[in-house]
Length: 243
Image: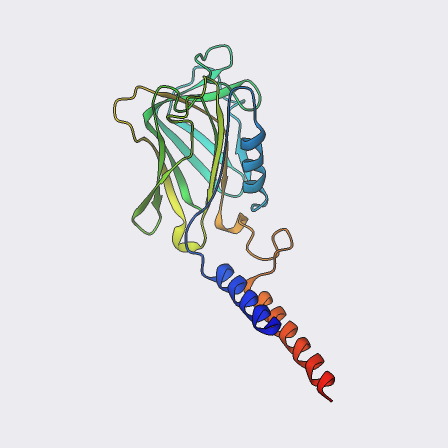
C-alpha cells in the first residue's frame, strides 16, 4: 500500500508539472488603506520572474495623455492607448491612488489597452478603486499566434467595499503558445461609467519566466527521476528484508 501511494504521488506531481497549458494567475484584493493581499499576490507573481522591469509612471509628466510609450527591461517597448492619462495623488479623486510614488494612470473602464512591441509572457499590475461604481474588470489577452482569452479579474464588484480599494493581478504564460502581443481592459458591466486607476505595471518576456529550478522547484523530468529512485530504494529495502 505504501509503495502504491508513493507511485501515485510521484505520478500526480509529474503530471501536474508537465501538463499545465493555461495562464497562471495571481490576484489579491484589499479594502481601503490595506495592501496585505495585493502585496502578497505581487510577491508571488514576481517570484516566478527574473530581471523584469516595472513601470511606476513617476518619470512621466502629470497630465500626459495616451498614447504613452513605455519600456520594460528585457521585454521591449509597449504602447498604452485609449482614454488614459497620467495623474498624481493630488489630481485624482474618489479613492484612486498610486501604489508607489505619487503618480498613476487613470482610465475610463471601457477604453484602455496595452500593445507590446514583441510577444511577451507575463503582465501584472496594481488597480485601485475598481468596482465601486459597479464596474467589473476583465482583460482580453490577445495571443501572438492568433486568438484571445478573456479573463475575469477578481475585484470589488458588488462586494460593497468603500472607495480606495486596491488589487494586484498578474498572469504568466504556461508555454510559448500563450505568448501575447496586447492586453485589452474591459468592463463587463456595460455603461457603468466606472473609472479605474492603475500603477506599477510589470512586463516579462518568455525568457524572463522561471522554468527550471525557479525557487528550487525541480523540472518535471527531475521529479520523475527522483520518483523512480525513491521507488527503487523502497524495493531494495523490501528485497533485503525478505532474505
